[in-house]
Image (tube, rainbow over all chains, first blue to last red; front, side, top):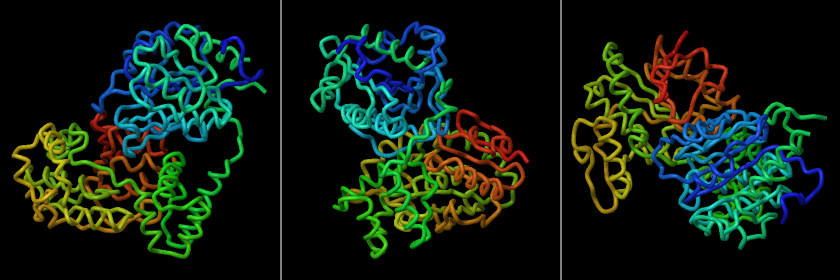
Length: 201
Length: 285
């Protein structure tokens, strides 16, 4: 369970997918603020918000993170060191060619975008070279997605439910399958830094 | 080997069995029924096929393929899962508002207008446009071509009957789209459904058309194709954009979905952004 002890030595993660819901903005800011430069790992985020067809997440986070933050667009290639948010009202997937695709399929767990959809597609695209993290939230979205990442050989981590503003989401993931790591945000961040440095070498 | 960026150097991981089975299924469907889903994006297609398996009570994609080849009725059912009949009226009201303010005045300069709603699904978009064009005094001289690959969706579109529980949302959209009337003027509510005024689609031709295999059939002033291209890979997106480009008259308009763009296609230079946030483009050359 220690971030300093990777599950499999030599693991090379090439992308990180993150899911969060209620309480997610604060948790994500704590997790991602002032990441060291250069930062090369692409980070892709589904954060549940009301479906307003408009989101300012990219601007809000772009100002605070000192990293290039974008709203993921259809067929946009994932670029090193960028942080991407799923656009509201669309499911976000990652294809094998490491580009995004959007879709208007019905909501999953009442959510569009859905964390499960992102994580399952990313697991197909990246296999063992993917890390998935699930943070605070009030529903079951993401539990199955994390399991799919695990089955594809990827690394899974959830925010410690005791610390999460709303513990339902990490607990759902833990109930479905024990994630590789259950950690408070501070240590999830350390894990992220470690994945980045392993990625760079 | 050192990988410097994630995008430029994806690991050449082998196709999974599921992906191989999906490709074979799509090839079989194409050879047997001439429906071409081979260049659809995989992630969404895979979800829909797996969903269809569960609904049809079949154990595997090869089992589905076996049945589909011998049972055209089953294929008809599968088609409902392969296409996404999810739409709403006046979806993204800003799009319709922009059409009203920026495109309609140009359309008024033509003696007659042709509009192509490509991938019209169950018709919500067609009726939205027809209402807008009527309110702007254009409907009587406009020919709308509403096309889709799914005959069941086209049948629904022709009927113009939508579930009553959706109407509240549609009404709010209509008002935000600059609606000039009361939305209830356009439909009759009965039982659980709202039936839209049939005269709205008197000038609409509903037709089977595939952006993957068919060609252009008319010169148009406006093509509206919303939330369709996202299901295509880049090659098929290019093909569809090529059809739109060919169909549009000089300086004709192309409207896409709110999160769609031509930036990642080879047509990015052949359209000008007209109303950028609303995804309305204009044929450049």
